[in-house]
Length: 388
Image (cartoon, rainbow, N blue to C red):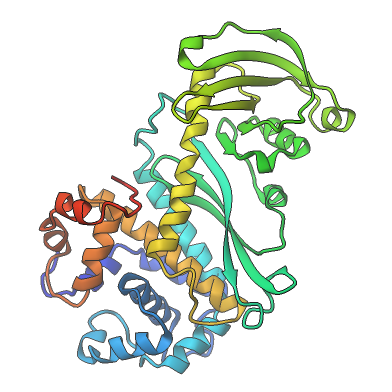
């Protein structure tokens, strides 16, 4: 790395410029723009994410204090609170959504060979959503309840590397299960869903796409057993049955055979009932895969704790979605850097180091390699961690 560049510039060097320009041109992001381009906007918002800025005025004050370094950081336009607010309001958020997908594709390639914790060659996803509460008077478009606003992040997480492969942002009133209608399911992949997504018509869509699902059954499930398979009760599996649904409309929505597995989790003293269309995996592997679904809960908690996606710099829908997609881009970019530089640091540690070294003219590998991650983990033992 060139020691004459700031750490921030070296960080942004990992971004493919041609692909970014393609995304901008697709939505005419720089049409009639002379001074503050989409690239300037992205850099300012990425800086805000990396340094935990509280407001647009905060961003302006920090960047103007380093005015002489901005040109070398790639920021050509004049940083102004009003200019940045206007850019967030009118520049199409799909520019940054499309660019985030480019980074996601790169990250998934890098983490494709990582261990899942379960001996499995198939791609495995966990799907769930998280709610971000908003003030209805400031965000009237974010409909949720009579006196409360909210938006939802519906996320399909690739469990190898905890990379969000698909993110759909909706207002709070949208029911989680309806978002499945927007997906194109990958043949051969395994989708792990909470029992809130137990809709047999939509589960049959996954089955017809030659993909697999694992979910939990509800207590009122009516299931007709056709035959049972041998189980290893020492592994916690109580029964493994193949059968069909009994209720007319459930059977109409899913007319094929299903597999029901009863499992006892001795650690939590909890009995679980799984439904899946995967007939060849062992019952204990199904239970282990469903346990991996917890990674998406950690992902949601982690990004809410360490990225700026709960407090927003603008109130319009476009500004909010722009901020969220740039936050996701920063998250994935740091994950890419961790992999490409072979860093043995947690993602939390990398972000903390970057937050105080962005203006330094030090090789980024040197700045990140000097950290003692064991000491950092001891100090922040109550923090959520990913990429350990």
